[in-house]
Length: 260
Image (cartoon, rainbow, N blue to C red; front, side, top):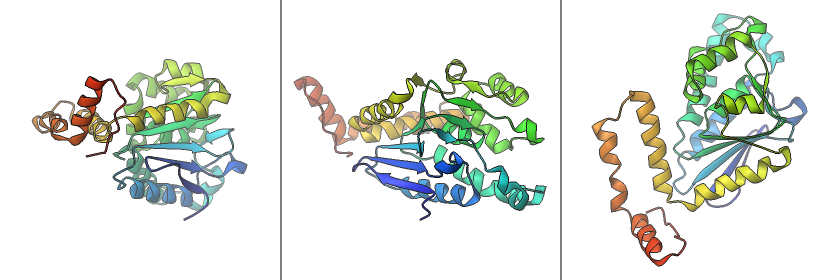
């Protein structure tokens, strides 16, 4: 496994995926996209994993997106760009479709492909000095349709168009107003808040969190609630965790869920 993407197992229920190229502010390269996708496909299969935090190394940047220095070799024509796009989009899909709840811990810059990675996560927490945007119009480039799909799922149509048409880099408060992030905290508190959120997620019944994610993604995809997904909503009553949670509620104790 490349050291440019690190997988840290915090405990049995929480893992951390780290974009590890701090000397370049965690700018993404082709090998990084490939490795990131492989890692998410791998950890998506872990039955006992309850939450994943993704962050950038160094504390100054989540990621500014793709390394422009790579363009001449990897993306200098439509043919090369299409080939590059296949694994980039596959990686975004692996993050977005991961059944485990995900948190983007955003410190500093979150631009271009970095914002796309964060947009694939379920929860986004950033610091006050964080900056956001997708200024690809300055390069004369379009955002690929599959990448635009990710942005549209994270925000509204008009907001996505504003981000792409204007190409501005904007601050954390505007990102919050645009609903691109869930929470803005002091820079020194980003890690604490992200881990606090992860702890709350890990304390809950893990099957329930995964089901909620499955329901929401299915509704977004279908544009409606199907009978199949509606019926799946009743399976929780047959779980051991429901019995544990119900009894703990009656006893006024903290439940210890077994993921069964």
